[in-house]
Length: 204
Image (cartoon, rainbow, N blue to C red; front, side, top):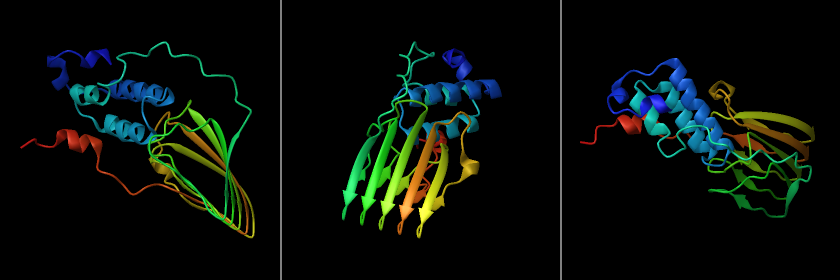
């Protein structure tokens, strides 16, 4: 945000509009793959807690100063990318690119799908989980919007998502589950240290 670039202006108190402007810049950055979901939620949370313009500037110092002419998002990707786990599973974690549409099939097994450090191809992704006598764990960072739609028979899901923690204009993760004698865990990770508190920490 241009109003935070001046040296003396950094000590001035930020307005609600400036906080919202910074949050919008962070939203564009996560949609473009510049920030992971965890980085997005940490920084947006810090933006709405920021007191000065300088604190807002620190949150976007490694991002383009103004909305760039980003390439248009591709047309709807109708083809879903499937991962299959039979009597076993895989871990998807760290910094990885999540497909716009993905599916995970588990038969007497399951996978861990950790979205904290993932980058997105856009503002919304869709995940399908098919579980037969097994299930997967999906870890979503706080602040993103999670929508779960389930069809279960002799099974079910454990969903531990704090809807009150959802950020304005947050990316959307849609999860559809089909379970037979199995289920999935959809949850937040354990809380981490506040990003803004780290910035304010006395260096001495």
